[in-house]
Amino acid sequence: MMTRQNINIVFMGTPEFSVPTLERLNNEIGVAVVVTAPDKPQGRGRKLQPSPVKLKALELKIPVLQPESLKDENFIKELQFYEPDIIVVVAFRILPAMVYKLAKIASFNIHASLLPKYRGAAPINWAIINGEKVTGLTSFILQDKVDTGDILIQREFIIPENATAGDLYQMMKPLAAELAVETCYLLISGNFLPVKQDDTLASPAPKLFPEQCRIDWNKDNLSIRNFIHGVSPEPGAWTMFDNKRLKILRCLPIENKNGNNGEFEIIDKEFYVNCAKGSISVIELQIEGKKVMNIRDFLNGYKGKSKGKLS
Image 1 (cartoon, helix red, strand yellow):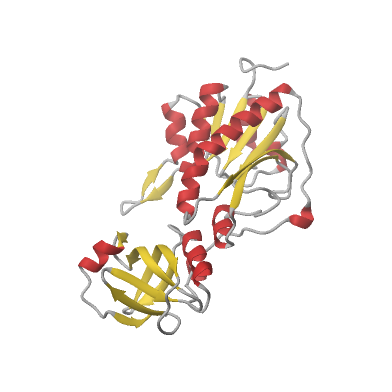
Image 2 (cartoon, rainbow, N blue to C red; image 1 turned 30 degrees about the horizontal axis):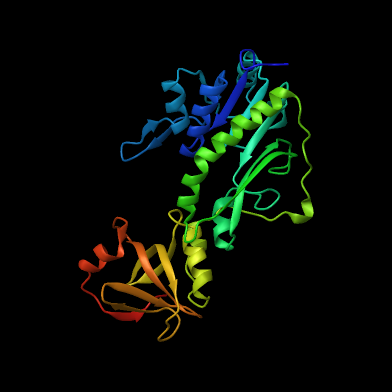
């Protein structure tokens, strides 16, 4: 049986979400090499910036590969040099078969849903938009069709009331790390039986874009709360207010409704908006060109109308 002393793990990831998994895998088992996105120009000076995963890998003194193309022959040769036993993928690109088949034991991904529900790029967002009470994480073996591979381990948990996608993202980071380590030990043991996904239960979770995130005030307050929280902080649910785009990042559903859908009223440092059923109370927002503010700070400097219509 393989042990942590002779196992070669390749870790693939790019954003902040992947960092705790890299750190914990390296601490508990060891990571032979990290694969992440090429440095990208950012900011006004367009200076090249490394990914969060690269920064952590350099700190941990782990070799880093940054291929422009995952099908590049030189990259494949470099990866083969490390003789991967397990390839662990957390928030990375879609791997071609020529890459994931290099793993002697298996290549697996950590997905932020209870597959086959919410296959796609935005599972956290769609779970909240759809008002799910429970979600989870899945480790599954990679195959050609995205998010369809056989399941190794699933862990479910309750979504806290009024959690945003950002809140859930932060909650899941250490849980993903824990699941990745557990899955590696399972694969190393050789005592695992992957479970096929039931495609009839599958649901999509496509990436969301700003143009899709305009608030429809003709829906009920719970649906609107779920939508606002499901796309917070990014790309952000928005509406038009004083001829400017207003992002609402947090709100609470309340029962009172006095007026037509989309009408707002500011009373006693509270900002209420009517929905098809009930209202919402805005908690956190961002006016176009300004920073994110809680409602009290925003209203302390607000000199406009106390009533009006959002669109």
